[in-house]
Image (cartoon, rainbow, N blue to C red; front, side, top):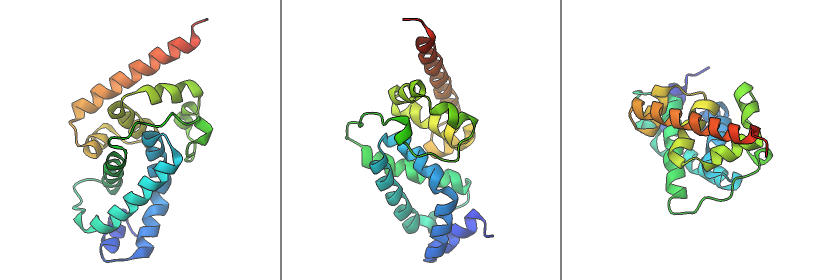
Length: 176
């Protein structure tokens, strides 16, 4: 089985089978990430297509300074920002309407309505960090590379995300 870097090298040579294999490895995680950024499945699908096209065009530019997954999430993020720039965000989708990657313990927690609302209320910069960390299982350094920000900024944003989630959880448990 070829490595992720080998697949990118093959894509750079025009191998559509390699692009399909790369999509099969990363498509669900990228789609889940994009759903949470765009907050709309249709827009997320369009951005994923834009992402795959950008990967097709720029696979030869991959230099191996980061993991392929980090590079892919960076491409997806740039495509999302290009598509969403200047557009008001759509209302948050109901959790059942969002892409469902293979559920792990954190994903099962993220299905709860209150958490979806809390994530939807986060500024985009914080939501990106939360989704990459909790849903895409990227570490701090990988997130810093994807977002092209210092590791300290990632840690700070995660701190704010956790505080906002605790605050939101407190509101949910307080009797009304």
